Every structure is written in structure tokens, then in C-alpha cells.
Image (cartoon, rainbow, N blue to C red; front, side, top):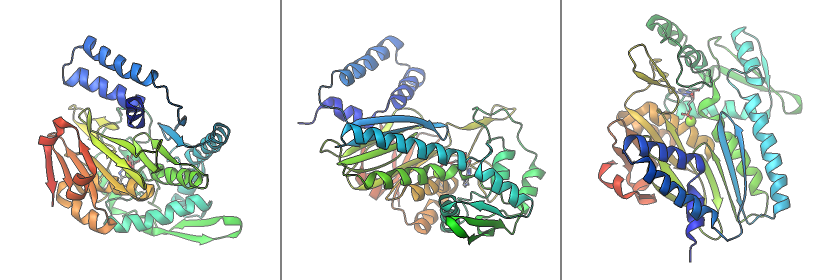
Length: 379
Ligand code: AMP
Ligand code: MG
């Protein structure tokens, strides 16, 4: 018999519960007192859980909370894994950061000066993968647009950003240089090092749209070498899981950017469920208009209309790039991205509260009752 407390634990992370609570209170006008009571009930269910707990850890990296849960691990091995994962995540955070000084900023500086930089094996893999993913997405995913991202003010951790909207001619100027990851050349050197250079000085790498995906993949790869029943790595709602959790499927909530949960996806194999959203990291212009942190590399402007894109696929790096590309593609072009990146499990949401999904996704998601009417099938 499934234990209710474990069922809740498997998908409703504390930040998700807080966020959902805040949205319920603000947008659905649920009285605070009743809300507190319901949240208390959820907490009581969690606390009264008497089954042995899976091993869990949390770290704050990539500007987000990373949660790892192992099933079937012995506590001492689990603690050693958590220590190792935490160090891995911290190194990746430092090496791949788009604006804090580190390996990537040194490489960007070298590109700007027309010189060569040095990358280690992981960063070289990230760059090589980015090249393939930029092509597969038809240029909608393009991590070489770091100058544009910076110009829009998104090289910050403080949201909403207050930087002024860039002048249209500045955006045009940056676009005219056509930065692309395909301008980057990688040459293998000794000891797993790679020399990297760009034929285009306008290339500035910003790996914010893909770094979490690769980090989650590396974490899962390391966990798969252990004899676990299963594991889940959740980097701020971007999730990859394999195996089982206490003998049952992992249950992953797909959040609605307008509040609450769209539905639950169950997974037992090895899958990544990633969401890119236009709603958490944004700027506000002088007229109060919100603009997104995801830019269309083809025109240099923040994307509009689509609020989020969720994909399910068997790789974190692909899921991350694909979710970003799908937000750029929107409802008009999602099919091009789906075929270029070989995706069939896709869900998009828009400002009007509609939920668009492929038939394959519909077959995978158990929709929340109040969402059923909002669903439109993508064909
Ligand atoms: P994600 O949350 O995975 O969609 O990543 C968004 C981040 O990727 C932004 O904060 C930027 O750092 C970067 N970015 C924005 N637009 C793009 C784009 N079209 N292609 C690649 N990276 C992007
Ligand atoms: Mg992404």
C-alpha cells in the first residue's frame, strides 16, 4: 500500500510548496488562515511519516537549490556521495559562470582579444555539445550570445533587474556580428586540456541555458556507478531521475508558471524533465512591461507570449537546451525544434493560461483536475 507521506515527499519540494502557497494566496484569493491550515496539514503528513527516509541532501549552486535524493543507499555511502556531488557542483558553478571570474570568463576574454584560451575536458564537452545543439535547434538555442544577455542586464543575481532596456541600434550592432558557437574551434592538447579560440571576437559564451543540464547529467552519471535502487537530482525544478524510489516510480510535478501544478509525471527509467520559464527571471521596462531572460538570438529581443516550455527526454543537457529553444520557438515554431532536436514529449504554457502539449506528453502526464480544461493538443 503506498504511504501517503512518501507520495507527497517524492515530488512536492519545500520551495515548490511555498511557491504554490504564495500563488494560491495571492491569485486565487484563498484566505491566509485556511491556507496556513492546509500547509500545516501537509507538513504534519510529512512529519508523521514513519518509514525509513531515503537519503537526501541540498546545496545552493547555479543560483538555485539543488536537491539530491538517493533510494536504497546505505547512509555512510550516501554521505560520501553528497560530499563528492557538492564539490562537483561547486567546481562547475565556478568554472562555467558567465560573469563571475573563472575559467569561462577567461575564455571569453581571450575570444574578445582574438587569443586562445584553455578549457578542461568538461568545459570542452559543453562547448562541443552546444555547437550540435545550436545547429539542431535552428539557432534558437545559441549560448554564444553572452554580449546580448549582458546588455539586457541579465548578468546579475538580483531580480527583477533594473538595468535600462538597451537601445535598438545597440542590439542591431551586436546581432550584425552573428555570434555563434560554430565560430569556436577546439584543439586537443596534453593532459585533457583543450585550446579554444573563436574566429569571431563577438562570441561570448553564456552557458546559463545548458549548464544545469550538463551538471545534472554528470551527477547522475556518478550516481549510476553506485548500487542504488534509484536517484533523483533536482536543480531548481530541472530534474533527472533513474530507477525507483522505495520500489515506486519517481513522481515529478510540472509547475504552472501562473501558480499551482499542471500535473505529475511518473518515471522509472532514466529521464530528464526540464522546464524553461519566462516568469521567474525577468526585467521590467520604464512602462512596467516585463521582459524575459530568454532572448531570441535571431532578433536580439526577449521572447514573448510563451511562459514556459517543459520537455522530457533521456538527457539533461539536451532537455535544458531544448526547453530554452522551445521558449524561443513558441507556438509557431515548436515543431521545427521538435524535429531538429528529436523530441516528442513537449508542453508549453502561454500568458492566457493555456497548456499546449503533444499527444505523447498527454499520455505521460496526470493532469491536475483544474488544468484539464486549459489543455490544447499540439499536432
Ligand atoms: P534556461 O533557464 O535554461 O532557459 O536558460 C536561460 C538562460 O540562458 C538565460 O538566463 C541566459 O543566460 C541564457 N540564454 C538566454 N537566451 C538564450 C538562448 N536563446 N540560447 C541560449 N541561451 C540563452
Ligand atoms: Mg535551458
